[in-house]
Image (cartoon, rainbow, N blue to C red; front, side, top):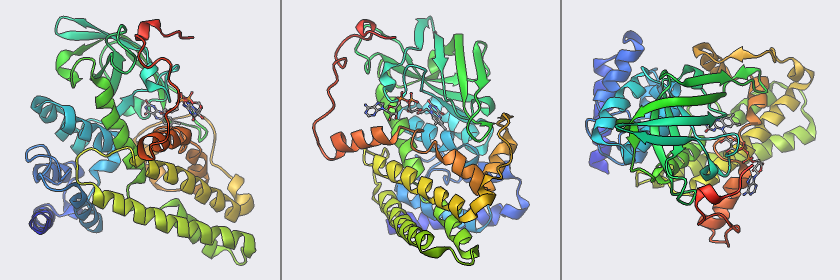
Length: 394
Ligand SMILES: Cc1cc2nc3c(=O)[nH]c(=O)nc-3n(C[C@H](O)[C@H](O)[C@H](O)COP(=O)(O)OP(=O)(O)OC[C@H]3O[C@@H](n4cnc5c(N)ncnc54)[C@H](O)[C@@H]3O)c2cc1C
C-alpha cells in the first residue's frame, strides 16, 4: 500500500507540475489526468488508472481540489461514477477504449435509461424490447425519470431480449447513442421548476451489437453494478459544503435561534459527523472493484440526514425561505449544473425531496438491508421463476 500511495502521490504531483490548473484549459487538464492514470486509480493502466487500490482515489481528489484543478466527475456524474465502473467490470477492451476517455474529458455525458412507467422499484419488470437484427439490435419502448438525458450523448440502457425467461434473466445491457434516429427526449418539470429528468421514447432505435455490455440475457448482473455504484455515489465523502454545513452556517447568523432549533442543530451535526466517518470507513474498506449491498446503508442515511438538514435550513431562514426564485419550467442546461453548485438552500430543499426516491427508494434500501445484509426472511415473490411473457401486467 505504501508503494501504491507513493506512486499515486508522485504521479499527482507530476501532473500538477506539467499542467498547472490555473494555466491549463479544462479539457487539456482532464485529458492529461486520464493519460496519467489518475481518473480512476484502481482501473488498469491505459484505461484511466494505475491498477492500485480504490481508496487511493481520495488522495488524488483532495490534492487536485486543493490545487484548484477541474473535476472530471462533477461534469459527468453518472458517467464517471456509474458508467465507468460498469465498463471496467463488464466492458470489452474495445469498449473501454471507445468510451472511457471521452467520458472523463467531458466530450460525452452519460445518462441512465433504466426506469419505466411500469418499472421503478421492480426494475426487472421492465418491458422495453430489444430484438436482434443482424449485427445490431432494434429497440422499442419508453423510459422515464432519465436525468440529464437532454444534455447526454450516451445512455445506459437495459432492455428485454428474451421474454420467455424469468424477468431477471431475459435482460441485456446496452450503451445507446442519444443522437441516434428514433431516440426522442421529452423534458419533465420537477418541483424546483427545472426539467432535470425526462421521458425517453425509443422507436426502432438501432444499437450495434458492439455496444452491448456483458452477455446477452445477463444484463441484470451488469445493471446491478451500475446500481450499486449509484448507491455509493450518494454516500461519497464530499469536498463541497454539505447540507449540514449549510445549516451550521445559517445557524451562526441567527441572533437567538432558541432551544428547539439549537437541539435540532446539535443532533444534526452529530449525525453528519457519524455519516462522514462512516462514508470514509466504507471507502477505505473498499478493496474490491464492485461495492456490495451494504452501500444501501449510506444511501439511506444520506437521504434522511440531508432532508432533515435542509428542513432545518428553511426553519432557520424563517419567512425568507418562501422567496424561491421561480417554479416555471426551465430547460436543464450546462448553466443549470453551475447553478446547482451555488447551493441556494431553498432550491436544495425542494430538490432534496427526491433523495429518498432516486437511486432506489428508502423503503427499497431497507428491504435490501433486511434481506441481503441482515439475512432476514425475503419478501414473498410469486413471479420470480415465471417467464416474463406469462406475468400479468397492467
Ligand atoms: C430526481 C430523480 C432522478 C431520477 N433519475 C433517474 C435516472 O436518471 N434514470 C432512471 O432510470 N431512473 C431515475 N429515477 C427513477 C428512480 O430510480 C425511481 O423513481 C425509483 O426507483 C422508484 O421507482 P418508481 O418511481 O417507479 O416508484 P414505485 O416503484 O412505483 O414505488 C412507489 C412507492 O412504493 C414503494 N414500494 C415499491 N415497492 C416496494 C416494496 N417492495 N416494499 C416496500 N415499498 C415499496 C416505494 O418505496 C415508493 O414509496 C429518478 C428519480 C428521481 C426522483
